[in-house]
Image (cartoon, rainbow, N blue to C red):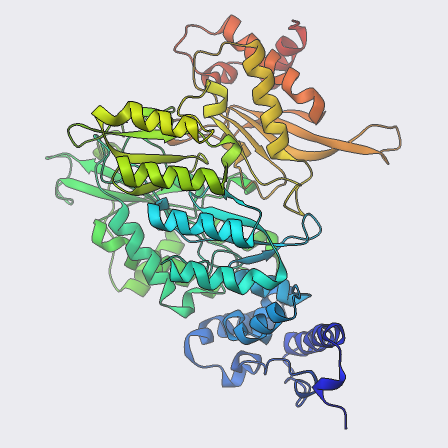
Length: 606
């Protein structure tokens, strides 16, 4: 009789993938799994979710939602079938065995492993990327040191700061995936649910608690939501990913309008409303997803800070029950809102809550002060007398392990011990006595980093790109550096400018909200279109916070090598023809239709 010892590790992995595919096919047709198939190669026993009739516990809400799709004659997408066949949190033993065998996941397991924060990013890299959860983007210096050690020992010796104020480690080999997960947990961090169909890292104001003009400290709110997710398995396995952000109404933007749920702190003045008492409230915005050309829209609802987690939970659960599980491109909250309308959707949320939420016209709230577009770079006074924070420039979000150690040392020796990550892919060192600012600046420079940046480099955002992501069409980080080098060498820009480079339509770098946004593309260089090079589609006029807007397409299929010179001409036209130095690029470009602006740019020559 054949047993598992008769198979080589490679044969076991092949058979596991084959059996997984057969089981997935049967589950998608609501057939029971084939009994006994797991034993010969010791594959995991399918979870109760593979038998809908037996579904109980926290996963049952997702199984019932899938059942409604099947009962209506729909077909689940492959990712839904993978979750139905085996919940990703029931496969940890298999993951540990794969690590011992130095094997990367295959088939549906590539998707399932993302629930644990491990992304197999082949063919871009034959390696894992591990993404963390860092609520509000703030961690302690000793945790930052631990991540640096981990990146050095198990990864590529560096970390990337993401556009969700988060950290990623790359170039992790198959043997070290589990070690990374467990070491992060020992550090008080976790990668759990940071990928796939889950609620992603919660963002909040990076200056929370130290901002001289903030309305509310977002740290307790972000932390409450973070732990609420971590401790409720029913909040994993959504129709697709879900983003939540808290804006405290302070100096720096959080980009909450790009999230599925945006909580926007506002002040209600005395006498503004008879229904709402004066004070700080949160306005509720829903449906942001810039990759699908939509910003979160105001619902008219205002919430007390203590209501946010409960209301967010109810919103997510309506999405769990009614989000699209048949089409991945439509499986986001935006599309449910488009189908139902906000009134019906919030009516369902209120039914779940068992009460009606308060509504308040936007004009009854005090206006939000303008954000400081350069407030994440350089030295700035805190709310606390005699203390300042320093915004450190990280070139396109990348920082080496050695630099991380040096920054942790500055935070512990000269600051309050916090590392504050921002959505602009850099970090802040806070709580530094004014008398020691010069010492901190010198230490930052000694680490090979800087606290100063040109207008271009301060607003430069780039996703991972083709060097580390299989979806990307262009090497965004490399091209971002080339753009900055070119522009800094030929222009003296005296105003903030945001240039966002994203490698694919997922828009991780949120190209639609940049003054200038670049979307990766393959550009044909021969008549037949068979030979292509890396390039971009170019967008202009995006914005955020008080100037929130989606960029307009300016030009398609620009070769990457031609992009720096094109942007130079765009900015020269702006500098020469703006109404006055206070007119932003967004305001300037909005004065022209696309064809006219193209003509102006084409006529500009060095």
